[in-house]
Amino acid sequence: MAEYTDPHDDRAAEEMPELSDGDDDADDDQWQWMEEGNQPVTCLFCDRLLSSVAATLQHCTAEHQVNLADVIRKHRLDDYGYIKMINFIRSTKCSSSCLSGLPDGPLPWESEDFLRPVLQDDPLLQTDPEELCSGEGTCSSTCPSSRAEPHDVLLHKAQAAEERARCSEEALARAMEDLHKLKLLAQGLVLNAETSKPSNLGTVAELREDEDEAYFSSYGHYGIHEEMLKDKVRTESYRDFMYSNPEVFRDKVVLDVGCGTGILSMFAARAGAKKVLAVDQSEIIYQAMDIIRSNQLEDKITLIKGRIEDIKLPVEKVDIIVSEWMGYFLLFESMMDSVLYARDLYLADGGSVYPDVCSISLAAVGDKLKHQDRIAFWDDVFGFNMACMKKAVVPEAVVEVVRADTLISEPTVIQTFDCNSVCLSELEFTSTFCLKITNSTDCTAIVGYFDIFFDKGCSNKVMFSTGPQVTKTHWKQTVFLLERPVSVQAGEELQGKISVRKNKKDPRSLLVTIDLRDRKQTYSLQ
Ligand code: SAH
Image (cartoon, rainbow, N blue to C red; front, side, top):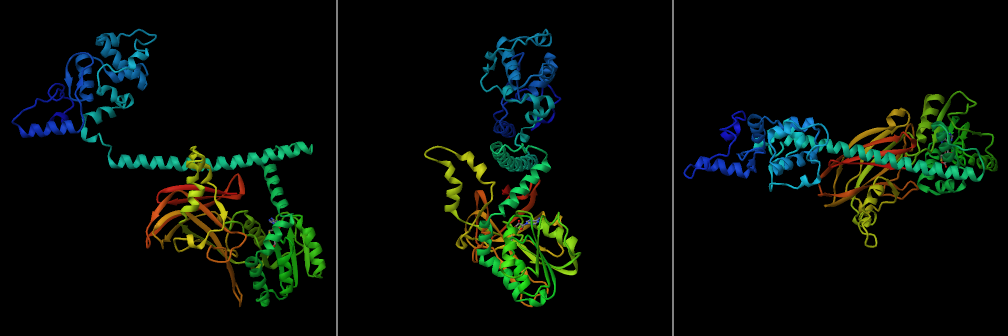
């Protein structure tokens, strides 16, 4: 396509090509030229028709001594200013010298009237003035084949957009957290005002202390302990582990981190422990004192009120640490941090932490009805579109029981911890996963749960699962809804990536990011 190859050949290359009836090649060229969408452009200052915007710019510079890019830059024209200038020149037929000799002050094309095109489909009006200044406009007009953006440019743009979307999602999750905090703070202020306590609006550390206070006071009420004790899967597993492995406990010194009502301490004492130290910061420990006395175990069990991080144990080392520290999706609540603190400070060489192994698993869920009820619901609420609410609903992970018949993949373990060796930093992690799909349908959510093992040195190993396939526990499961369901085929392997980290603003809550089929969503668990 000769007419595009030499942009410096002002006349021969830039004027409209002659059509020749008998010349097939020229015909082809002409068709291609038209198909690729280059429209002829009328010069701004004379009647000449030029083959492209680029050719017109060069022609204006060479023939009329007006460099449009310079004019745009000089007057700092935005899109509207540029459009008005083009229409002004065309409508007033002003000369090129009038343009170069403009006095300081308002521009002659300020009026909104100049937004109206003078020429229909004027290609100069379809040109971005910024591109025109940076020279990109010249290229895209000169090389019609480059009008369609190259694949790698598009890919780059898509990646940048995806990154922006990811950042926005994270910002949204953080904003939701902030809102939640503000709500709590406001509630606190109102309560304080009511009881005329001094305001608690203070440092972040004070806020943290208040949060911890709220955390421990939630364990002060009997209700939460009743729920845990009645969770047979949980409590019987601890009992069976201790009663069926007396050799592990015989004559040992045991530390119970977060003893609550004292149930695990009493199991340990009955299993043969020489001494049990039971620590809890919450007020429930006063009930535990009565309970231990009522069961004549006060000689064996010593109760200590306080945070494990703040108190000093009456012994230097312990042989065994037992604790029931697990939260939703295993790590919510971050109580594991306190167990690791106790392990590193008090566990004797060769001692053991129980439970010793825990794993987190994921599975794919296909539950269109639930998805309809939680997500599509917002599309039409009494005839009103409330779809914007989905952006608030989706990022909150849901703790609920998932029906086993809605699972559409085999489960896969994404992380395993050995409580005897794991370190604090490993509790935040990123894993890739692969879900073997068992049903051809839409995947509407990912479900997460954990399994717990009492293994080390046990002749009778015990485990329990909080998964959807077995008896439900008070931890239920944690559901991460997908805003848009993903269509999957039986036999397919659905690949993904998950990252779990503490929410810096509230370390007891978690931020979970799931990356599935190039869609990323951050969920908060609170
Ligand atoms: N062991 C009991 C209670 C488990 S609930 C049972 O199995 O039924 C967890 C308990 O740990 C709560 O009572 C809470 O107050 C306590 N706890 C959490 N973090 C603690 C810490 N850092 N120091 C002391 N107690 C803690």
